[in-house]
Image 1 (cartoon, helix red, strand yellow):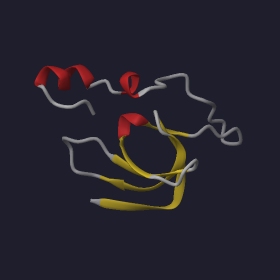
Image 2 (image 1 turned 120 degrees about the horizontal axis):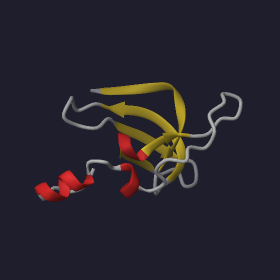
Image 3 (image 1 turned 90 degrees about the horizontal axis):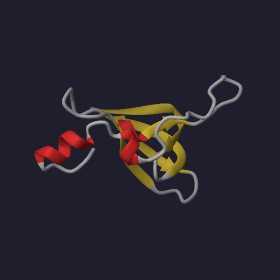
Length: 90
């Protein structure tokens, strides 16, 4: 299922940069949500799995920069499970 986000949401895609999420793709309960994001820096459109997407900081809303994962390897908690199964990481 594809859901268009209106208004778009300011997000940070790990290892790609800041952008505006314009939609979400939901393939069902066995999959991560996929965030369709237009990057601010170069206008590229990327589809990023949920563990790689963070809201941008917003001082007015009290949302400060997260000190959690800053790379895809840190964000993907299922990486080891996929490696064991021989699948690509999320």
